[in-house]
Length: 164
Image (cartoon, one colour):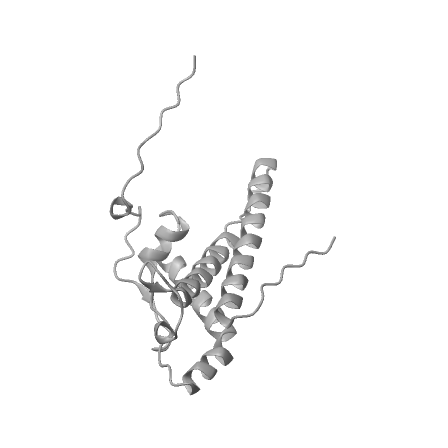
């Protein structure tokens, strides 16, 4: 006989992180949505061992990277008269522009990638190496997710190539 005990899924409002980031957020210029660290932490499942300072550092670099990648696209939209990403005509999912969702997706993926890239430590045991190798695969996937989100915002075809 076997027993499978399942805990019921909690409502999203009960999903509380184990670290209080307060009102910490990362802002670029007024065109881009604000990145709220609490939301980022919940979305990418970053535990409290990642401090607010470390997360702020990673999120700031992620915002800088994504906004730089989208700068020419943003300038073209601004010439068309749009002053914010949310104002650009796009499909809405859950009452939010998919452009805004994809911007957050790119930033969140890169922020998590930056945190994971720094997780590899001085632990050189076999177990530590295996864990670090599994993190490397996650980091690659996160970079891919960010590139795809940026491509989707630009409206260009996603490209994935792997050397064999």
